[in-house]
Image 1 (cartoon, one colour):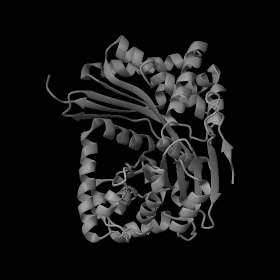
Image 2: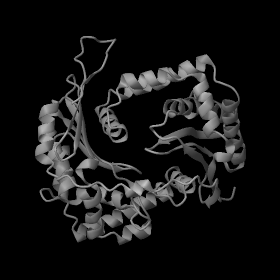
Image 3: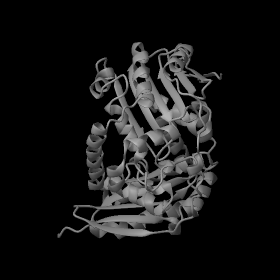
Length: 428
């Protein structure tokens, strides 16, 4: 069991925050952050499985299961699940990513037992009735249509597909129309049996709780037996890939452009410099992209860069919405800004200002218990340990201008980037 007590230089009278970790006999990891000066608790059950663990034929099954568990369990009907926490002012939800699935709740501290009981039943005792499966297929197909009708969403999926080609990381999390229609109860049970195993589970909680009491509740409610965790799909090598440009005409009023390239993983030594590069390049109104493309030229309302760091790879990219006639000019300006970062180091004032922006954003996020729980769960899955705030701040403070220059030259070369363009086909 490890303890971590955070430093608080501003309010020394505030009770100290305590991190603790326990590994249960069946392999489930329980990580908590005790914050005694709040009344709420955020709880999340993280499972190390996502769309990258699927085949072409099963793509979308993890996300579909995430939906289906809410349709009824051994001890709760779908209405009882919906009302279980809302009736006491709480919140219950779930999400699926390329690498993880998380079922989470935020409740008052007095209702921790209830929240754990519901989430435990969702994961361990879903009924998956044929009637509900067929109804939920219609719901997920509508969600898919929603994504396909929203350029902001679908353009990122197409970019991922182009960057990772036939690798599972290029699959959309929601899956395909064809696959969703074919999902069966047996297929879902098989997927759960393979991946919803204790060794893949992390149960994270942040807020007003006691670690020992919370761990005892988890041990009582999660009776899963230890089983072998198969990671064979994660071992599929990621190819170097081909740079691709795809132009798609759509009946839209605005053109959308997304460019991206493979970047480093979340465990890489380039992690902090890359995050700082992303912040100064395209995060917020003070970023170079915003100030240049939106403020100076007026080519876009929405312009930003993004970085997605995963366990063994990552993506760095830029998104912009602009007029058809400004597509080429906007792309040229983006690459021009990249070239500046590759040809000369950033100044000391910009470096320090961006560090302050990163640290301020991080600290403000800690005021939200759900954000703290998300940090706990993802840190344990990615690193096998708690990444303390002090450690992150030290990592940010240690970034030098030359580090940013180096990652710029590693990842911001024009010839590395794939491009997806949604062009309006409406007559002007």
